Image (cartoon, rainbow, N blue to C red; front, side, top):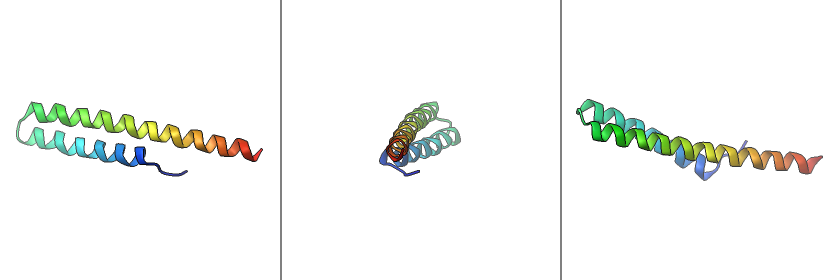
Length: 66
């Protein structure tokens, strides 16, 4: 399975969101916690989109072999 830009960027956003949420919790900033959660959701969605693209590519390659 290959890796594409959406997978990498999505997982990076997700990780940044986790850090932002934790930092918001540490300084008692609900606003930063919510922004961090938002980044996590956005990142996870982008990563899943990238996963789906890779799955489709793999199925297309497999169907060409047969």
